[in-house]
Image (cartoon, rainbow, N blue to C red; front, side, top):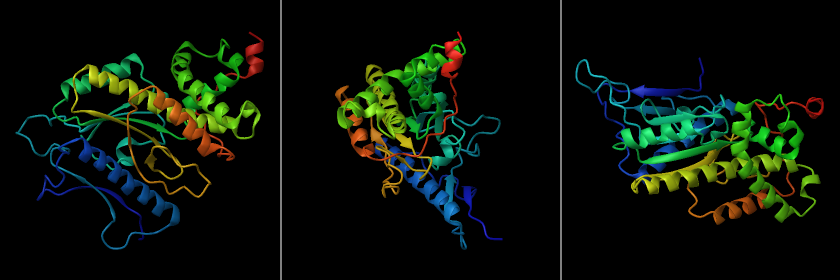
Length: 310
C-alpha cells in the first residue's frame, strides 16, 4: 500500500540520537527545520507524492522524551527546550507543525494567543521551574485566526461588540486584541489612503495584518518580562503559521501572489514600540491591491440586528 508517512521514531539502540539544543540559535534552527519537515510532508499529501522505501518524514525521539532513560520507578524529567504560546485552533497542532516530539515543547494555548493572567502564570512557571532546559519562548499566530477575525469585526461594527449576547469571557479576549487591530488599521489607512476601509479586501487584509501585529506585540511583552527577570540567556521569537502552506514565517506570504513558497523563519521579538509601525507598514504594502481569501472565523459575534434590539 502506498502511503505518505509522518513518523515519530525511537531507536532503543541509540536513545540519545536527538540531543537537546545547547543554545538559542540551535533551538531556533530545530524549530525551523522541524517546520520544514512538516510542511514538506503536508505538501506531499496535497500532491499525492508517495514515500518510496525509507519514509522521508521522520521525527526522532530521544530516550528522555519517552521516559526510557531514567532510574527504575522515577518519573521522566520534564525538560522542554521551548515555551510555545499559541492559539487553541484545532488546525494548529504545535508539536507536529514544529516537527518535535514528547517533552520538547511546553505549550500554552488560548484563543487568539492572548496573554491573559493564566497564560502569564504558566509562562512564569516554565521560565522558573524549567529554566535549566528552556532556551526560547515562541509566540505563534496563525492565518485566518477566529479570535482575531471576531475582534476585527467588533472593531468595524462596534454595535455587535456591545450586544448583551457577547459574553464577558469573550469580550475579555477581544479587548486584548483591539490594540493590534487598531495599529493594523492605522497602517492600512496610512498606506492605502483614507478610503482604505471602503476598498475591496480591506477586512481580510486587516485580519491578516492584525494576526502579525498581535504575535509581534505579545513577543515584545514577553521579551520585556524575560529581561526584567534577568534571564538574558532566553530569547523570545515569533511567527505566523500559514494554514495554506503549513509554514511558519514572519512576515507570512500573501497567498495567491506567487510567494506561497515562503522561507521558513522565526523572527526575534521587536525591541522597540516603533517596530510595530514598521510591521504595520510592511503588511499594508504587501497586502495592497491583493484580495486575500476569506478568513475562517471560529468565533461569531451577534448580528447588528440582535444588538439593535437590546
